[in-house]
Length: 512
Image (cartoon, rainbow, N blue to C red; front, side, top):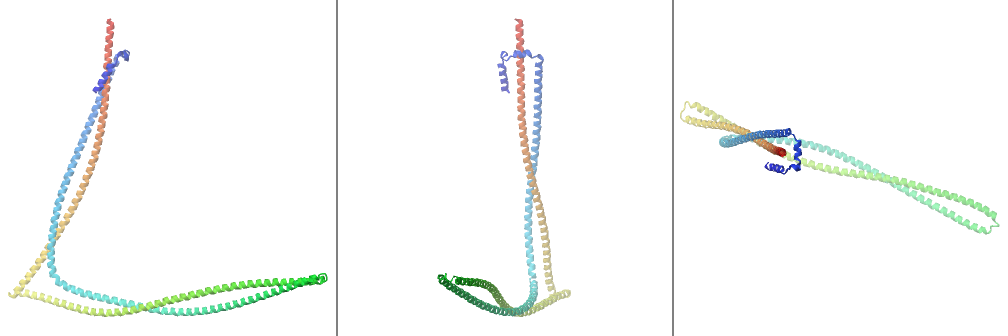
């Protein structure tokens, strides 16, 4: 601000009346305008000061609200920390309680183990007798089960033997059928071989006939050619006597031509016969080849059927051998099972004897127990009359009864303690689970509070930055308005100086 005032003063000092034409401006300005300008300057300054004060009040109010939010967040953090400390202390105490309860459980379990050992020692003899009886009953049941299994196996094996016998009879029938079919195939093969031999003989005969016919045709052609050669020689010899015997030669020539034409006709007919015979031979050969191919196919089919029949016979014979082996194995297994059956029957008899002995022992034990009870009752009845030996037996029995009752009482007490400890343990476990659940909920709430604090802190920081920005902008506006007010004051002062100077100049001129 001081620098701006200094700048304004320097600008005011640098202004000259002559250079800037201030006198002309002053002459145009009226007296009311200066006062109006001063009023405007004062109003603007007052308005700017009021706006600045309002902005300051708003900023102070926002700062107070931010301080209140910060104090609230601090209080919430303190409460969360205190609740966490309480929860940790409760967890520690509960852990100690659980440890104590576990120790109590261990001690109770040890007591129960001791009592159970005492009870097991007293019950071992009775359990041994029961085990023997159960073993005997189990052995009897096992033997009965084995007998049932053996009988079922025997029935199944008998059924299998019957089925194998049926299959064997079927295989025998199949073998008979195969033998019959093989005989039929052999008969067919002999018939086909005879037919083939006949067809081959016929072919040989026809081929020999064809060869003889060809030879005859060749001989006839050679004979005709010899005749033609002879006739040509005669014609040449007679040509010398052409003048004398022209008519005779012409006649002879005509006759010879006729003969030649006849021979040519015969030759053409012979050639046609040859071609026809050759065609018939080719057709016959084709038919023979077709029949031979068909016969070969039939032979191959017959051979294939024979081979298949042989294979099937071989497989069936192998199957029969396997079935015979299986039958022998089954017979051996049946014998073994019969032997096992005998052994098991002997074992069953032994087990029955042992079972009867065990029954007798149990009956004897029961009789002894009944005798003992009767003796005890008699001793109790005789206790009123006899004070000697009966009193000692009674004392021993009473001591035994008291010890047994004490053991029962201790066992019931320990069971009650064990059940109470289990209940306490379950209750503490439930309480521990509830405390853990509450602790997790409080941790979640604390995490959410931390997140909310972080978000509120972030928003507070952003709001503070915005307030700082607004304060900076307000300060800049305030400085600008102050600068404008100072400029207006300087201009007013400059105008007043000019007015005073002008008035002084006019007075001097009037005096001069």
